[in-house]
Image (cartoon, rainbow, N blue to C red):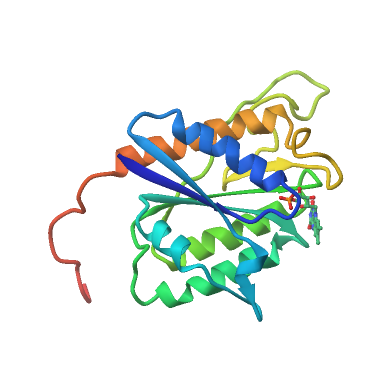
Length: 210
Ligand SMILES: Cc1cc2nc3c(=O)[nH]c(=O)nc-3n(C[C@H](O)[C@H](O)[C@H](O)COP(=O)(O)O)c2cc1C
């Protein structure tokens, strides 16, 4: 059984809701189990996040999906504290060759979500992880609409799962149904990638100074 972990920060529940939909997508794929971990502010002391149990569970996962609200054009501060806390794993390469993916939600259709996802991508690549993006691409040739608001991946982001949420809405309202459906599809894509990538690492020495 492959394990996909979803680790996220959410201040007011919208990113959490998106992560739940991704978890449903993962769970829809047989031979994949999903675990969800919240990054909580009470694990942050003097700017440092610490929760050794979560770190161990992530290390035991085949893939990790990182989620955060877009906050001032980047991941939220709590997510950044989590990211910084993993620097102790950098030299151990414990997360190398795991699959990774990311999701974010913010108020505006753009809202600079791309930059938040770039932070997550850079973070995952620093750990030697392999990044999975979205694969939904629909093109509706019906002018004058610029995009179709009910389509999967309606915001047209392939770096990861992007959604919109009004800051004062309930997480039951936003992300809306289109984003929730897209998140489920995204979760199943991650799970299928894990099964495809799974198995033993290839034999043979790494090429040094080639
Ligand atoms: C401090 C702060 C900064 C924010 N910055 C942005 C932003 O840069 N772009 C944007 O579109 N929305 C921004 N928002 C809106 C949040 O991204 C949005 O409310 C999101 O759904 C919050 O997710 P959460 O409920 O999981 O905490 C910001 C909200 C807060 C509170």
